[in-house]
Image 1 (cartoon, rainbow, N blue to C red):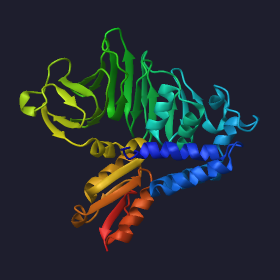
Image 2 (cartoon, helix red, strand yellow):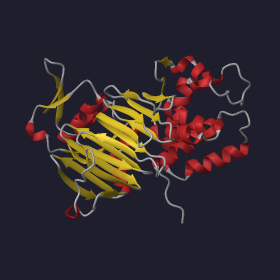
Image 3 (cartoon, rainbow, N blue to C red):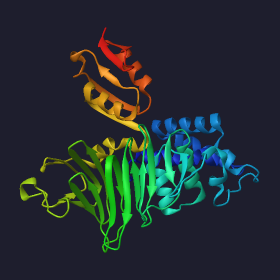
Image 4 (cartoon, one colour):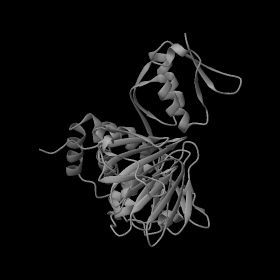
Length: 359
């Protein structure tokens, strides 16, 4: 029995359908197949309508192929020549302003997939504010994001780093290890296998060591948060003393489905389902996923992604449970939902913060 497609798989399929529909070779048979795909799931229809609207309203991706015959794929390097992408040249990298669905574009970069898949990934990128590094990190370079920013960074070994809001990493590959310093914020790592050269993330007083795996690391004040979605990692104190013991139930390894928090050399380890962990990583597609989250915690998340800050002005609101997926930069939409669904009123304080109170 075929498993249900993930959100990412649905999005890439919808983007591919949008691209095919705008191709001169589109046929009546294609119309029938599209109708069948749309009818198979409400999620298919939602994704298709959203991406079709993006394509129609902006028409910006078509500028990549300006001057080319219809249906012809732009040559390699055409993206860099397109004025839409506002290329910014620096000493160490070329940054192209694109993207919403970071994992999809990252995969296209990593695998160099066919034209439709790459273009579909770029279509998903239109509406967002992600930067994609067009050079390969590894020889000694730093990357950072502003508040609300998201960045995809391919490395010279075939790995991909997705950098969350207000974050900074330094990349340095040596003969001994692939060395990543997480100076602040959060990053998701998709690590290419290389048993001879471990992939080591330094975060605060901890090291997270991997060979080939997928995991996130978040540095939050005096706490290091690690979540593993594939493979396993080894968590050590910096530089080499393991901080895990048998009482943690995981030895010195964190396997897929493990979430760990390290604070003041004390560790807590929790097992979760992969879908649960993936939900907490929805920031990679520009969303905040709330699942019965207390309003105080939801506001803390929104404040990570926005310069306009929310503040609870009535302590009785802090425990309200909020549920749903919200675009991280759509603060006004989140406030409207609170005002319509709860007895909440939003006002502005003298210092410009948005204060939430009961009606």
